Image (tube, rainbow, N blue to C red):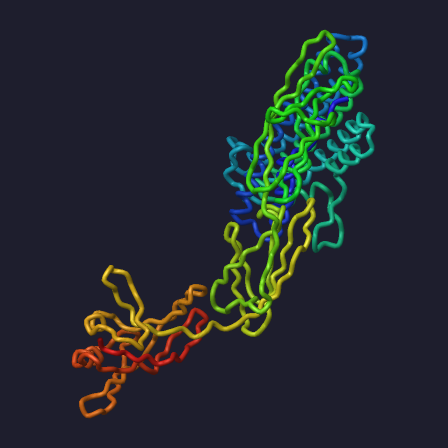
Length: 521
């Protein structure tokens, strides 16, 4: 018998996972990012539905071809497959009609489910599916129940039947924060944005096509693996995993659907014949990257001829992953944005969420920014990942919240190449550069924090010819006219001091900075 050609692909599983993640995110905030995410999932589901429809049509075509060659043996299975196709088409079209009605309720008579304008409309789905006297949602639920009972009658395998029943379940749903379970249609369509409702219906269509595929596959398996299957043979590569750690082993099964067990085919990969007759291909993983391979399967026939079937696939090798951090350096600084890197091996960024105590944690693409609140109080970041469709907490990390260190005051000036440089005192400084400098700035420029402070005032202490200390007050962070006049009188080798420097940081606190000695060079 053939391999199950209706098996969910890794891409389809990812689409399903993204739908679950986006539905959960709706409970938090209907943002444009969430709406964009639903649009991407809907587009992916549309393409997936088209592919599954073609695959189901191919299975039905095999049954048609077999019935044409052997009507006595194939007519029964073709008739049952025709019933499955007709009931599936009716159910699929019913769901399509609801998608169109919801979009037109939101966008008007020209609304298009593939180009939704009012994606965030929260009332259209409720009006169409839940309005009293209309209750199209109840009609849909009853239709799904009827179809589920019909389709599972063609799937005797208990595991597959349970999978279909789960995918097409319309049982009441208990939402987070609610004591009682809600009707399936209320939980699915009440106050749902249009794009979410349409995506949900596309996901339902995907589940309907999946159920149809399982039923058709079973019917196809009931006919003898004879001539018609040989006519439809295809080569399949079934990897154990497309993503493996470096140092591990990549393993894939290369099979021929509906293969005759009495006639083992020969399998060649990259020009070399496999040494086993089970179609298992192994490759070393000494380096990282994406690796392609291709080959062909040769199937001999009784008349001595050989049929060749080509195949190709790829796998990705990545470095082993681990997170190492110094416990003593788990520090966040109050008053500034602290970049944080969060990742879970094997889980896409779209499937990762995180939260933080004592402050806020925001996401910007694949990066996170932590902004703690209270100094001296721990901030704990909790990371949750969607694994096998379930949110699972995978890590919690504690950080100490500290006040930003004091900055260093400096005189900004332009060097010979036109670049801005910082003079921090303690060495000769050209009088020309001093006279051209605007005033005083301050910053933490250690290469890690790189945080600017705003100087609000300072004094210069300049000694006159009698040795008297003459203080001059700045004009904010700028040199005052008096200070510039005093600078003009300084000669090479003279020194003066900048003191009583006050600066305000991004945390809003005012700091008294260390004085600076300036030597005229």
